[in-house]
Image 1 (tube, helix red, strand yellow):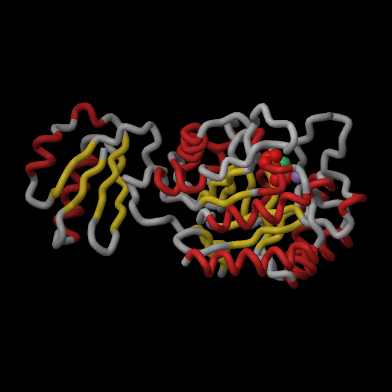
Image 2 (image 1 turned 60 degrees about the horizontal axis):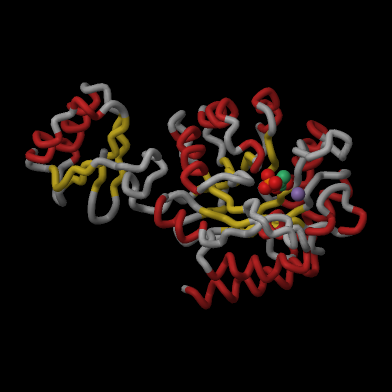
Length: 333
Ligand code: PEP
Ligand code: MN
């Protein structure tokens, strides 16, 4: 349920109302914009007398939120959430380019790619250390050693880093990681989501291969309901009957999610298409439809990559793409 407060409500009046609501065992989330203040009420609101609440002098209107996602709902929190990673911001008009290899393969590889993508305009370095592979016989990532190498590349390049977590047990290894990625295959690993909700780390939550946007938002809700609101959503393609591309990039997810939620939304055209030749056009399309960022796989020697070489672009291609993305962003302002 949400209660919109009237303009001119004083802080004392607002706090008095919040105390009254909390006494009814409700959690109250305050969203104060320039014009209006919205109180988001979570919990068992069935015993709340909505007519009484509506009749209060400072209350403009009261509405039940019918969607099952509450804290992620834009109705609860009309202003865009801006996720901050040091000086970098994502959301609310702030855009970030995330680039790097699918997997960390060696110290030289990740450091070189870090320097290359930074020179090409990247804001954040990606690199998988724990890899969710379809085959147990495929390269599984360098694990804790991979995170150590990524951290070293962060020091050398000065760029923040993002890497995927697969298991709650490895959380302590992520202390120096700036954004923790929950991959498509773990989007509904609810134990993992709840544990990440107890941290204040920015979380990149990828849409599952066969999940609806409502399910994606319910997964974000799992993290938020534990207290962590630093979430970035990521569209990375879904399974359809089309086999020419690895997945089907659902770009309509960007405006739909922007409408439903205040959380930032980025797009990963690499896993969506599976083909390096398609990555630039889909990245530009993502920028054109208002994405808050793009994450692309970049490798300095794609043919020798240990994972996802076919969808990896080179640092030169990344630099060219980055310039075009910035042009598209200017054009849609
Ligand atoms: C990745 O980003 O390396 C990855 C495995 O992505 P996804 O979870 O989208 O498949
Ligand atoms: Mn990959």
